[in-house]
Image (cartoon, rainbow, N blue to C red):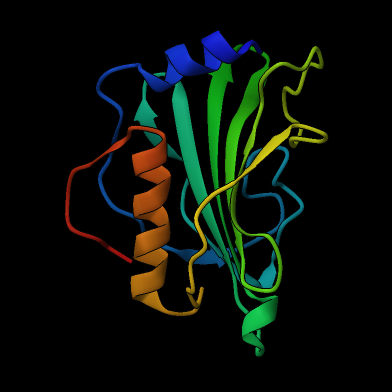
Length: 157
């Protein structure tokens, strides 16, 4: 995907997310490339439709130690062949902090795959605890702000 194509998708009007509800994560319930995630340490949202062709999902990994916790936000484009990952926002308290991984300027077909070797951009430093509901709200808010997705209703975290 070329940079201009990704920017055009970001400018698509009427992208909307109406809240986030994390629940248990079971293997095989999420679309590829996330279908192997599962276990009691992972909590996920449903695959939200933010517009007719774009889908978003959020993943929260909990652990006893804060440094092992994490938050992930994925934005996918729906195509006839499957879901193409466009953007992944990650937060790791132990390393890299808050960063974006972008699917652009690669000649690989990443349909139903992750984002191997894609461009990675460091964002501002934050001091969040993924186990804290208000910090998860902030993560979702940053995800939506960066991708120009409107947040419609109060948080359902």
